[in-house]
Length: 229
Image (tube, rainbow, N blue to C red):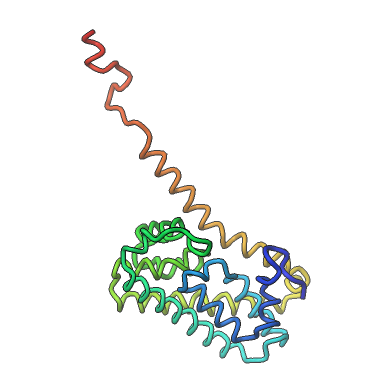
């Protein structure tokens, strides 16, 4: 299997799995799901590759059901930690200064995503890179009902964690997919970035509309003060 030629070589899913095994996969899923420093880690491509490697018996020799169960548990646990961190830190998170591993812009994107979609954002965010890391934290800051959060967290963890892994497992048994894994993984990364691009376009359009001057009916007419001159 070839390596993914997109981003640093040490973030290549196959390299990570061959080096750290299942424990590494679970650690990455946990970190990307709720730790603020995990936003840059590969998620979708890692799980898809995990499913493929399980199907081929390469590096991973555990049964698919066990891998999926552990991945879901790591994803759910990561979101739980993110939620509890958000509750503890509170609104102060929105005034935290930027650093190399923390950008205020990422929190604002997650907040806008959460505000737009409500509780179901916990599920939807699983499929949006970067946003999936910060959304549980924002949910904690906003003090979302804990029972509702747990419910949507489990649903999202199952759909994303098990769903993407199972997809990779079955597609990985197709010769065309195995022979073209590098472009397919690149396509997965690009497709997973589409929701982020859509959110950015919507935010820019919204900002443009808010900044545009509004004129009442007949706005082409001169102001009354000018007409009086």
